[in-house]
Amino acid sequence: MTWPVRRLLRNATQDVHDRMHIHDGFDAVKGGTIDKRSYQLLLRRLFGFYRPFELSAGLTADRSTWLHSDLSALDVPAGEIENSPSCCQIPYLNTPNRRLGALYVVAGSALGGRELSRGLDGILGVGITSGREFFLGYGDQTGQVWRQCLASLASASAKPGASAEIVGAAVETFAAFEHWAEGWKDETKG
Image 1 (cartoon, helix red, strand yellow):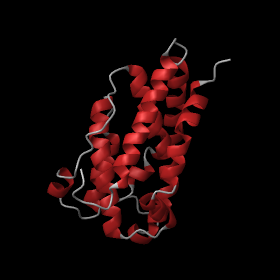
Image 2 (image 1 turned 90 degrees about the vertical axis):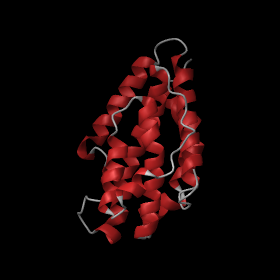
Image 3 (image 1 turned 180 degrees about the horizontal axis):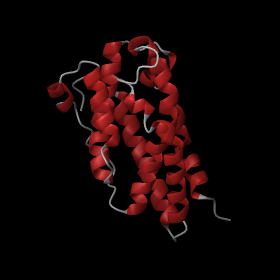
Image 4 (image 1 turned 45 degrees about the vertical axis):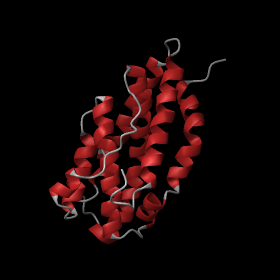
C-alpha cells in the first residue's frame, strides 16, 4: 500500500514542525509577550528567508512583500530592511515537484500565522492589520490557498517517483527554515 503524499509529508516533517511551534520568537508572538524590537528582528529574519525562497521557488513575492510592509509599519528604515541578512541555504527547487514540496511548508505555515497574529494586539493594537500582514497571509482566502496546495500535491504525486521528490524538498525546506530561524535575535548573523 502506498501512503497519500500528505501523510508522507506530515510524517516526514512532524518533528521540525513541532519544534517550530515552540520556537522562542513565534512562541512570544503567540503568547503576546514579544516586544516591538524583538518583533522587528523576527520579521527581518523571516524577510531574509522568504525573499530568496520566493525567488528560488519561482513564486510571487507575496510573503516578502508582506514582511517588507510590516517592517515599514514598524518604523524599520527601508535601507535596513533591504540590508537584512539573506538565507543562502535555500534548497535547490529546480523541478515542479520540488517546488510543490517547498510550497507545502510555506502554505501550511500560513494556517498557523493567522492564530499567531492575534498575539500582536499588545504592540500593534486590536484590529490593526498594519504590522501583521505576514501573519494574516491571504486572510479569509488562506484556507482556500491551502486546499489548492493539497490538490496540487495529490495530483502531482500520482506520477511515479514524485512523492519522494516532493517529500525530500519539504524536509529540506523545513530544515533550512529551522536553521535560519535559530539566529533571529542576531542582527548580523547570515
